[in-house]
Length: 387
Image (cartoon, rainbow, N blue to C red; front, top):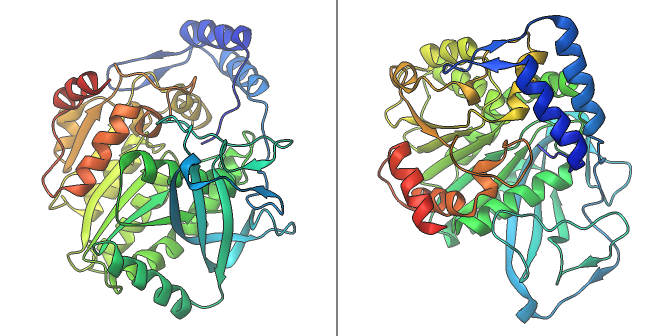
């Protein structure tokens, strides 16, 4: 999810209003005194979140940088339910496609990059590889077999591991590509990254549209996971963020119904970061899925302001990303990592999994190993040591 930086005055006012009108219990349940105050809070929030529309991913004028000014270059494989953009430089838009589309983007990371950040150019900036994340080219595959041929070669060269990243709400295609690149780069992930990009409209006011787009994408994420299970990969990890966790859980539920919930034994870690899912819905999904052999990992934070807003939009129900009853979730085969005491760089504390440098390093370490995650106390202690 991309949020524009708020002015200090707006952010301060948001904090005052949210503390006055929204209270959160230890289980993550919201108490909103009246709809009148809820509407006032939402109006304030949306006024502060001036949306920045999706930008061009490609440009005809890349300012090339010498190798000494490039921190890394990454090939990001893509399956998407987005339709092609009218502006070919945007590649894919927020419109929904009836079919699954395939692509691969080559992205460079500048040497000036700071872990946890995405140095993304503004609309008037040149695509300077020395300063910004830069997509140098995008290869489109018009058939699944052509895509499979390309990704199988990469999988064979990278240790036969795949990481599928599913982004969240209010995410343009360019932001999705750069976010997964940042996660791969900062975590030190050495396998094959696959971005599953569903048709988010990329606007703060498009929550309902995005929710419906997420529903549309479930079957195609299932197609993607089954396709990868038939590739040369021996392990498939999933990292899903925000509303992307709902797409992921619905897809895993569908796999369980068909009797192939672990992709033929290839499913590795399932990491749900700041999940924007109703708690009761999640429990229903897990009951259908069954207790996983390897616990799903839930990264939550009680100070996630974006999920507080989501809870209001959903009718003041608790969102999974703010639900701190670890013992309750453990019964479903879920390990809770509570990041409430950790800091993030976005004002809404919704992207801690990616923008906390120490945490993203630990996540990468976890994906390189085969044992389980440590406890949340161990995680927070290790974060402090790495900071």
